[in-house]
Image (tube, rainbow, N blue to C red; front, side, top):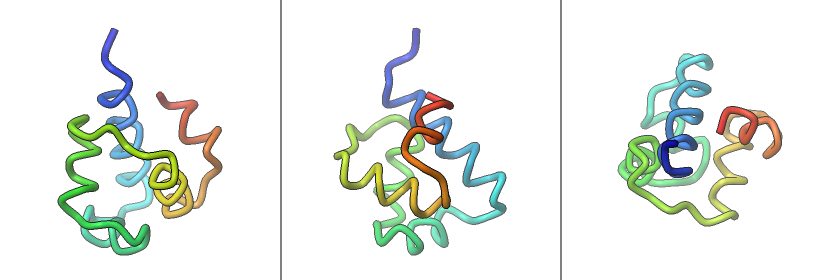
Length: 70
């Protein structure tokens, strides 16, 4: 089983692609740095809960919906 960071990153990337938004534009929407978002998508970051909420808001979904993909 993959680590939770990797599963979250994959779910996040998949949702972002569905929106048709670049990583840089998505990071701007969330108020986060692009390199930080890239690290999350690659499963390299252990993301704080407040940032997970920012990511879900950027995707225009609930936290529970984001975690369904994880």
